[in-house]
Image (cartoon, rainbow over all chains, first blue to last red):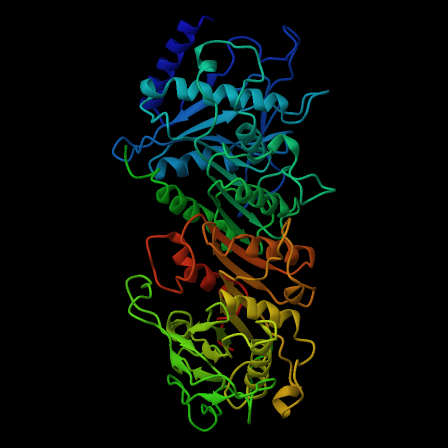
Length: 300
Length: 300
């Protein structure tokens, strides 16, 4: 598909988006995603209920993503602030918690006047590659596509942030750290615009620190003065270690990057945006205050 | 936590304070305070017309305290939860912000059904002694007096916490680290009961981050597994440095002590409970949620 065709497809997708609550996903790559074996048989994507509940409700597990996509969820026109958040669900880079940490996040973002872009990135981990490597390509490509279509889709190109849960939070931090250059050969004009997020929300992020050295950041999430303003939330009893956010916050402080951090005593991991009476599940109210304080919800 | 058996038996504090009222100041020491030579001048408000306002209002800055006291502020009987908090104002161990970080806090605690015990500890720092040393004696003595009078004052002896701002936060952390033994010769029976707080609230604490590389605590505020559940608040742009709360949080995690931490990007230092445009000044709402989650605000 040529880039003209791609843009046309995107325009058609957006038309569909405006007309319907369930947007039609757009493929990130015109052919096979980079590094995928051309023409090789792929395991079919599957979606199934998890064998546990969150806040008393079921959740869906999406597996075997080889054809990554983005889907644009627009807020009601009278609420639209022009701010966009690209959403990365978690799932340990094995699966995607596609409703708990995906569509439900998009619905919340829409409710506060932000456009949400749900990215279905490649899982499970690709053999022989770092767990984040293929997802990083997808994330870079997704943010580039969104920014390059900002005018067309009615978005402010200077207010495109990212939000990720668990492994998706890791992916945001890796993207923020590695936004200076694409990790794949250029496909089209979308790859010429910046893929650096303008802000990031890391919700119980994973793998920012190695298990055997909780006070040192992993090199792929190194922080510098170009790291975007960050919002973080985590519970002390999270089994994947609250040091992920404590250590990241320390690095942001050193780099003089503005951040906000909320650490609650209890809550475990993987609560998404579902309130269950535990104080940590009030985090969307904190995030809304933070977005507001940065002028991100104040209209165009 | 065990209920106080005689909650309503006696609402008198040293024969003077009924519920919903304030006691006369109670001297901590029968004679000269330990270690003092009587060389400190008359206590007075050091605030001048040149001092800055906080949230548009002036602040009382009490200086030259050599007769440390506690003043007990009781909630109304219909609200009383039995919990008590010893309040330590800040002021860099030079002065005490007695209203901003003292009486205003006690009034807020009363509104939650909590007894506020305002500690007027010795300032300025005594010559030839570490700045926290005389205040630590005062704080140990104060908590011991409150706990030993729990029955008489209808306070739950298992729900006596401390709350400190800035240097007062340093003092709380120092008390927690040094509550195994008194730092002065025994005066009376009040010194036989524990001076270890059951919980602590540190608001923009200063002076607990060790100088030098990394996020390490000073020795006099070292954290062990005996530290109580802790609530921390600070702004990243606080000139005293957010490293103070990050280092403390990291140490609490290592000691497996439950905590809650809220770090906001802006707000500076010394806002007390006064609401400004900065979201950090919503911290009292976070603190209420935290106290509720620990069961501290339940009527027993």
